Amino acid sequence: MKEMCEVIPSNKGGDKINVHGFLMTKESCRNHIYYWCCDQRKSEDKSCLGHAITYLYNNTHYLQKASEHNHAPELYKAEVAKVKNQIKKQAKETRDKPIKIVQDNVINTLEEFRPYLSSLNTLRKTINHVRQVESSPQPQSIVELNMPESL
Ligand SMILES: [Zn+2]
Image 1 (cartoon, protein in one colour):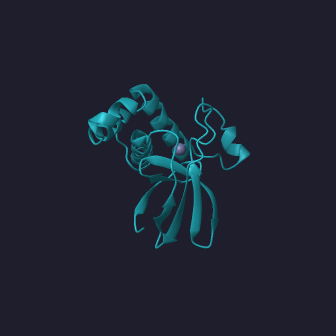
Image 2: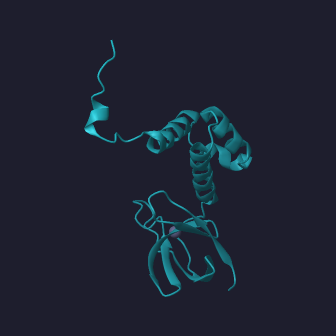
């Protein structure tokens, strides 16, 4: 199999890959061989045992083996994760207003996936959060914390 798998970066560092619409979490890797399990494995109602094996070459995961799942693929999940990452990226790299960032990204999202996106308010909070983390300067010394009030 020479099929490439799309990687969905996660802010928690645990990247996932998209295998035929199933999101897979990395389980282990040995040399260039990566073992993935379904991200629904620990879900209460499904506990899916679906797994996949990829071969990493030139920063690209090539699918070697993919098993069956006990549920339907959830294409929207990868899409929603991508949109969220893009929104965060834009929040960091631009000074655009949150509403503009959200609009830009919703327009670029296929209509069928839009219902799965977070609400405007939630996305706005995400943007504000990203920017607070980025821009809050740490005080350099105790002196800066106790600036005398100029009267
Ligand atoms: Zn599964």
